[in-house]
Length: 535
Ligand code: F6P
Image 1: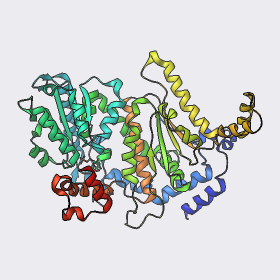
Image 2: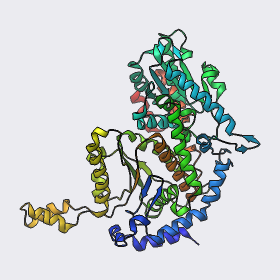
Image 3: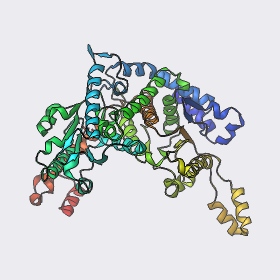
Image 4: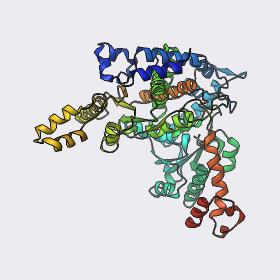
């Protein structure tokens, strides 16, 4: 059976159908939504029907999602281009044993987690002393997966902060490290150098700068540095004592690493117990993903809705719109998770991908986005599937009316996208304002909303550590399922290499004497022009 061909044919047959018509079936909303605990995933405001869903589930099954899922959790080397297992799930379920290549991988995870927790408590309680006393500020230096997870989660869980203030430096632009450090006291600051490889040029450059900043005031700056890495030899060369180095294995991908030592900044902010609740939320979603039938499985459904929109309907982007200010960095986090994982042009076997890879992911929190780019989402010529996230409750009981406004706006946007406003309705509006004739017609046309624009909504009770863990694991597994359906290896990232190599080779050409050198002459005309202009 050719599921892709059948899906294309079905899409062609139903593409013009109003989504709203699907609600003539009274059970539509219940049938096209799925629950796990207190999470509700509503995908009824899409053009999916029973036929499409059956085909998509069949596609997932035929692509081997179930055996591949089992292989991932069992520690098989499913990251085939790097010959590695993919076991970030073990970081959030450290109980028992998991034997991979003859070794139990869980016992060392528990040992590192215990060390991490003790260190975090020492810092939080003031037992760990800096030159100037207890730690007041933590600076996490990392980039990509060594930054986006911690920075997003620390912001998301602000109501649970009771530790030192956390700051993040990622960009090699000196403005970033400068602006973060300028307000801090080196005598009470702890620096975490977070880098899986401990070779990333941005992170190592920022770490050296931070060390110089600290050395100007602190007699033993190395004592106020901790490192998180898979490369203990390099952390030692940098001068960080082993007791403040927290390692992890290469089967934890950078963009999947917030659950382990890379999450140290989060653990320092909210404490080991709440960090444990974050892990428990992730593990809870893992269990659901492993056991729920495909057609009721939240990550599978989220992935299949994505495949429907991106590969079947041909929508090139999807907007992630958290109606939760504390999830402001979630779109950036998901950009790495989804685009670094599934933005690949060849399939696992190296053959050209026969269809588009994963979509462009972008977004901003609501309601801010409403006053910026929603114009295009509602009336632009391109259809942009939207993913809304909304909590039933905020964390500010005395501001409950804010939260009601937030929820109302979220639901209103999804409704407006689907229902739209017809030309007749727009005409009636203009007539009520006293317009007539050609002016009425002209003005009315600008006020038409085509509607029939798809969205999904993930509703959760409240943004707690447990719920954040559930949400992140949900998205991770969505990426996994999409990758399997597309035949992609979601766990490598070769596409980041070329630019890094070229940047290193360009560095000498920025020196004053580089003009006219053979290396410069070998560059293309545009790069030469820019080099000269910038020098
Ligand atoms: O350049 C991409 C990347 O390798 C990401 O995959 C990774 O999260 C990031 O760089 C940072 O890498 P590291 O943790 O090794 O410094």
